[in-house]
Amino acid sequence: MTAVKETTRRPLGHFAERSIAGLVVVAGAGVGFGLLLMLVRFHWGPLYHADHEVAEWFNGLVAPHHPLVTVLQAITDLGGRPVLIWLITIAVVSLLIRRQSRLAVYLIIAGVGGLILDPSLKALVGRLRPVVDVPITHAPGNSFPSGHALGSFVAYGALLLVFLPAMRPRWRKPAIVLVAVLVVLIGLTRIALGVHFVSDVLGGWLLGAAWLGVTAYAFRLWRRERGRPVPPITEGLEPEAGEEIKPAPAEEHVLEHPRSSVAELLVGWVIVFGALYGFGMFVSYHAKGTFLDTVDTEVPRWFAARHTDTLTELSWWWSKFGDTHAILLVSLVFCPLVLAVWKRWRPVLFVVLAMFGELSLFLASARLVERPRPPVENLDGHMPTSSFPSGHIAATICLWTAIALIVVPRTDRWWRWIFVAMVVIMPVGVAISRMYRGMHHPTDFMGAILLGALWMSLLYWVVRPNADLREGNQPAIKAEQVHELDDELAKARED
Image 1 (cartoon, one colour):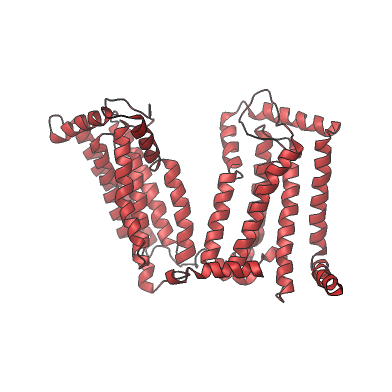
Image 2 (cartoon, helix red, strand yellow; image 1 turned 45 degrees about the vertical axis):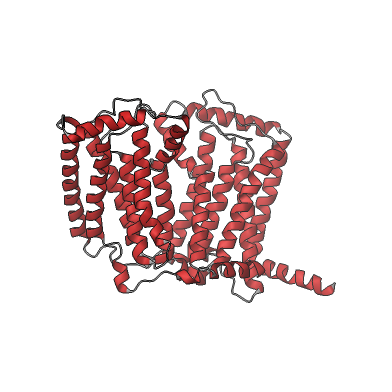
C-alpha cells in the first residue's frame, strides 16, 4: 500500500515542482467553467439579461450587412467539426507516417475528448439557442457550451503544441498569437451570427483550456516519469521531434528557375486557352451537319430516353465525384500525405497549379464560348456556367492525373496501378453521369480532355514534380515498414 502511495505521490510532486503556474491556470479554467455552468444552469438573472442584450445588439449590427455575414460564416467554418476533424486526422496520419506515434496518440486523445465533452454537456445543461429579430443562420442542438469555441481551442491548441518544435524559434510566438487570434475570432463569430450567447463562448473557451491543459500536462508527466527532460510548454510537447515533423526541408528553390517557370506557365496557359477556345467555338457554332454535330444531338437524346429512378440517383452520386467539394477534399487529403511521406513541396505545388490552372481555364473558356446546355431535360437545373467545357470532367482528369504522376514513380507497390486506373475510371464515370443528366454534350467531354491533356503536359514539363527522385529522395517510411506503425502505436499506449 505504501509503495502505491509513493508511486502516486512521486508524479504529483514532479508535476507541482515543474508546473505550479500551469496547474493554477488549468485549475482556474476548470473552476471558472464550473461556476459559469452553475450560473447558466440555474438561470442567474444578471447573466441572462446580459447574454440577451448582447445577442440583440450583435444581431442589429450584423444582420443588415450581407458581405459581413459571408465573412463571419467563412471564419466560423474554421471551427466547425468537418474542418477540425480533417485537420486532426491528417495530422495524426502524418505523424504515424513519420513514426511519431506518441504525438499522434496525444492528438487523438485531445480531439476525442473535445468531441465527447461538447454534446454531453449540452445535453446536461439543455440551454436553448438565442432567439433574435433577424435570424442570420441556423445551428442544431443546444447552446451551452459553444462547440465551435471548445473544439477550436482544443484542436488548434493541440496542433500548436505538437508542431511548435518544427518551427524556427522566431516564428513560435507569432504562431501562438495567430492561433489565439483565430480561436477568439471563431468564438466571436458564433455570437455575431446569433447562434450562441456570450456565456456559451466563454464556457467553451474555459472548458477547452482546462481539457487542453490536462492532456498537455499529462503528456509532460509521462515524459518526466521516463527520465526525459520537460521543456517549457512554449517549446512544444516534444522538441526533439522537431526535425522529423517538419513538413519539408527548407529547399533553396521549389522550382529550379522560378522566373522562367512562371513565364513558361503564363505563355502556356494562353496557348492552351487559345486551343480550348477555338475548339469550343467550332463545336458550338460552326460544326452543323458534321459528325460532331450528330453526336452532340443524338447522345443526349439517347440518355434522356433511358432515365430511370435508379440510374438518376446513381448518376447524381457519381456526378458528385467531380464537383468542387469532392475535388477539394481529395486534394486536401493527398497534399498533406505527400508532405508526410516524401517531404517535398514541389509535388504539392504541382497539384495546386493543376487545380488552379484547370479552374481558370474552365471559367475563362466557359465565359467566352457561352454554349447552351443540351436541349433535353437538365436534371441539375439551371447552372451558372455554360456547357463547354465540362468543369466536373476537366477537374477530375487533372486531379487524378496529377496524383498518378506523383505516386506511380515513387513506389514499387502493386497498389500504384490503382491510381493509373482511377485516371480512366473517374473521368469516364463523371462524363457518363453528366451526359446522362443532360448537362453536357459529348464534345464538352472532348473539350475537358483537351484541357486536361494540354495543361497537365505543360505543367509536368515546367514543374517536374518528380525531380527530387533523381536526387535519391525516399519516403520517410518505406512501404515494407508500414507494419511498424502498429507496433509504434501499441508501444506508445503501453508507455
